[in-house]
Length: 170
Image 1 (cartoon, rainbow, N blue to C red):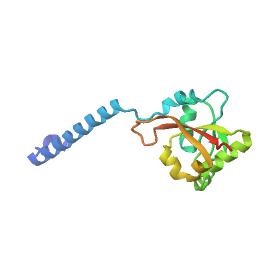
Image 2 (cartoon, rainbow, N blue to C red):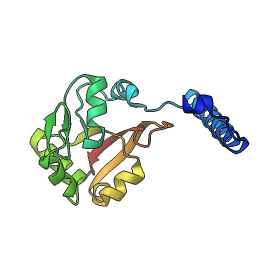
Image 3 (cartoon, rainbow, N blue to C red):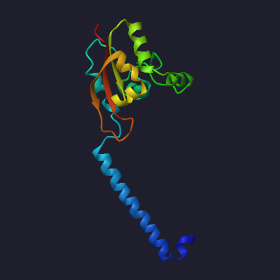
């Protein structure tokens, strides 16, 4: 009521109008960007899973597990934690997995030995550059091929990548 009864100075009126104009421009920018790009590609998980040949095993890393399990509606083997789980729990077990120096290499190696297989498909939100930076030994120990990807999301962790990881032929 104070503002209703007190006259507004030209300086305050200019400031309020400037803030409103800035908000209008930012709003238009956000709407245009939101219409042009998706926020996250997580909803395309089933498209990538359909590219995995029938009978082949699919794993994921902990970064992608929650989004993948939500849209695929089933648990996946998480190579970081080295077990099949329906979603990631943010607990001590996850903290220990993140401290592993070669978590992709260790997880894939143990999964190959456990399942007696030589090829697996991995769904991840990590691009090839990120995967090789996190665990450079994976690409030197196994043949890693990017099969398909869904990029262009606004969210930094909203892109999806499908990898085929297999043992080198001897």
